[in-house]
Image (tube, rainbow, N blue to C red; front, side, top):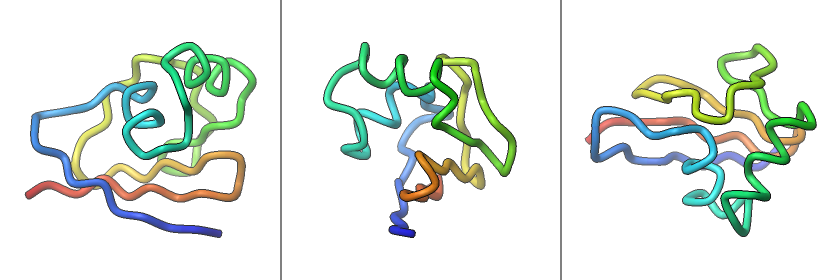
Length: 73
């Protein structure tokens, strides 16, 4: 599984925005589709909220292939 850190510069980032910023989705529509299709887990639990607010310490797994750890600066 590929892993990357994402440095959060604000209080939070929406899940769909993170998928775009991390290069896992090409557009917001694609990111929302991935969430709707159940391809995204947050902190080990399936996530269906496209606008889920992610904060430092959260871990997102996409399609069981990519792991993104949210860190704060």
